[in-house]
Image (cartoon, rainbow, N blue to C red; front, side):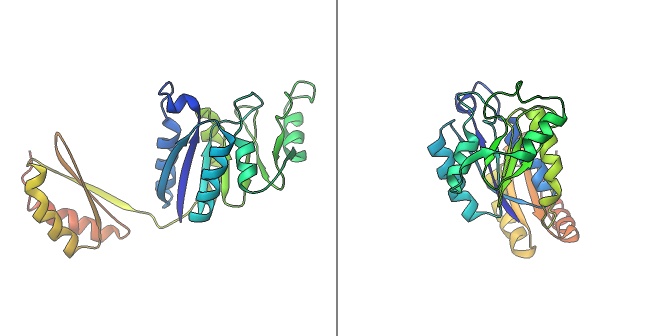
Length: 227
């Protein structure tokens, strides 16, 4: 299973808010064996949301969108997602009923709070108010981190893939000096390899077979200088 993560918000693009949602979602999805192919941040603009969601829903098994839910003027994510799938926004009976059953009267709710794209499955917000939604392979979650995390857990079981195993070998050598050994490692073992300079060079070895990853890491440790 592969997926794209889309975070929506002008404040993210301006650097006023750290994009912790993207990091958290990627970690949780990878834990479940999902390959993350794209992480994209876009503004609170209906046309951009519609374009990106429409492109990604055709290219990936799942698209997870977070941010821009609610009744205020810049909460336009549902509009964009609806446009991407050719749906209209309508009052969602299940979302409205859930809100009323949880203490929110119709008079208290701002206009549009319970509106979702036609045919969507409502995702109830146990931490906040604005509901999320699932439409085909598109999952729409709130931007408030606590709300997003709680809502994701209600659909986490719908994201599954082959788990990836990962080990890291730290080499006390210049990265350029390791190129030949990394090339041999990739030739001999069915793993993916990444190298990250810093305090030493961190060489990440990943694969779907735990034993192969362990053997590859052991092979490399014997051939590099360590601190």
